[in-house]
Image (cartoon, rainbow, N blue to C red):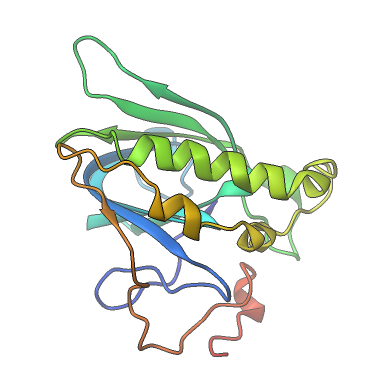
Length: 206
């Protein structure tokens, strides 16, 4: 994970080099733990907003900042234990864990694994859920040799090599799901691209 990734003024995440956004899903509630200096008990944050999914990551952007929390970035290569839950008396949700993106100059032991939950408060999720599981399976398939090195640093941007065009063209569209699939890349007129998750080395422009 990475707290408060760089965003455009319209709230859309600034893309990495070779990143392709697949979809945006509004009307969700995001539940995450172990957020440093969140001001809440145990670093727990629960807030409403929108989720963006790309071939590299999933990014939640809050409708209204919660303390210093505005957005949360989850690299797909760092997500594990993901599960689609359909409780009888509550909203459908996607839960899982995500490993931290540790700055190069800091020790992994200083950072904890996060537990997250994306709760679908408005409408269905018949478009989002299949696309998410298909995409994360493809990311893992195309990056198996990196998964073997789980104890060492894995560059989250390696996921960019995962092909997503065919997946998007054949995606099932659930009329009850407000998910928006990006047939054209948003903010394509901007040349701004990120090169790395490491903040001090982020080059900004291509």
